[in-house]
Length: 118
Image (cartoon, rainbow, N blue to C red):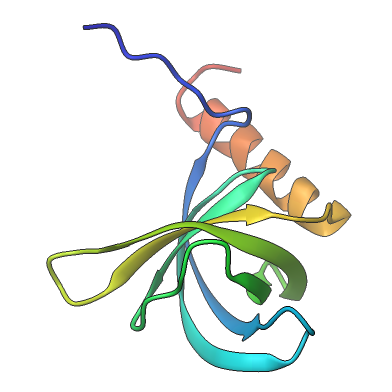
């Protein structure tokens, strides 16, 4: 069986702290929490959190990157429990953010250089 990559953008492994606020259809906060980003791409992020989120929940994420933090809006694509009582949650970004795109591109360049692919 051949693996076919369906992702539009390459993912980069990270370990960055984040916080989130889940909002209802009216934009009112209904849940909030914190966790860790485990990988990121220009189109989304995989986060590890303590409490489950629902498919299609809308989040405002604040991610610690480089010398500060950046906020971005996203939508829950999936949320799966792991073996350690945490939830691995895939988030699709709903907006573009130059700072996140630059962060991801710099990480990709750094990893490619370390792997001798550049």
